[in-house]
View 1 (cartoon, rainbow, N blue to C red):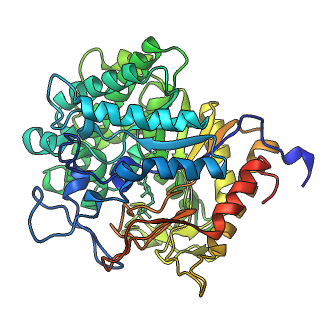
View 2 (view 1 turned 90 degrees about the horizontal axis):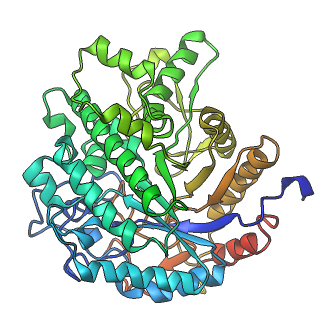
View 3 (view 1 turned 90 degrees about the vertical axis):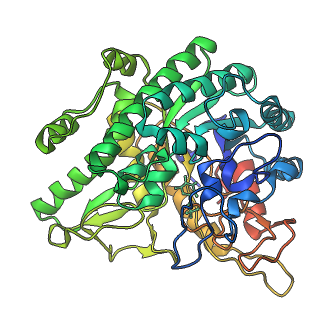
Length: 479
Ligand code: BGP
């Protein structure tokens, strides 16, 4: 490989998961019920359902996750064997404040993350921590109406203050809200709910409600960034968006402008968190649609003072849009006018595989903000089948990751994009968010748990395990 394609020394190779998708132990150690605990399991073609509290007769996959709560030492040892420099997970808000509105935190919950971070640091693995990854306390949803209620800002800031202080000497890299722009897809209850605890379609003006929630989260994020920098000036606190670049289906100018408008609907989420003020295109949209977003007098100043340090983003796919297809929404990304891109293939779940799109996305984000990027999710969800010897030969996953890493390296080496690290999603098999399945897998580490109920949660190495090990050992040279 040409020397010019090298990644910088100290590049943060690792893997990513989220607390609710791996931990299990949903009612252990004083943990409260979170919104992830009231989402049923789905299957191919059958949607997950949000139930009114935990109801008998339903299967809730996140209650057990993959039992990381009890297996974390074994898992961290496997991450270390792969050579991880960092590991991204989230802190379950309900382990620290079971209902969300208590005055005092739950010590057992705090102790769990102390133990986890110590275990990681023992191997020289940096924790990369998301404060909110799709699992706010269910109590805040029932009693307050989720993030639509301004009071939730204070509850979140209290939770964040406790953990930022507690782990100030163990965790340097933080993110506020995971894929905050998912709620843009408010037509689909699961997406709005995961980010905010709000089912937007139940609101009279759902899109306005979504923007109100967005504003509350921006204020919360900015307050947390400022607070974090006061607690430890070395903290690096990022925003986190789902980056799905949208291409015009054709070079027809109307398609080009539609693609640009589609991106505005997503960029508002990173624009405000990175720049500290609302972009003109959003203010114009609110005026045009007659939306009345409640703000407090000092919110503008709060946003200005709380700009994030880096852009964390997930990248799985690109989309293409076409004007005369308007009205068709993509159920995953929510974009209007989405059409199949004939130049790329798709996964079994219709996610369009586009490694070159990652390089394009990195350039777009870097040019827009001129701040370091961190690819905190990327990966290939598939149904893995063991061969006759019981080994999972996941060459399709290796091919996907290799192609994306190649493009990532070009963005760094040829385009000059500043990139902090790369943490492929679901390094350890976990519960899929969109489907609630065990069988949609991403891991280098196999977890023996299946949608038919079988499995004992034992861990095994897939072929991709040793592949990724040599990728890290060579700092991305041997792909
Ligand atoms: C992102 C989420 C993750 C994760 C991933 C893969 O949207 O941040 O929580 O689950 O997508 O999605 P899925 O599990 O639905 O395949």
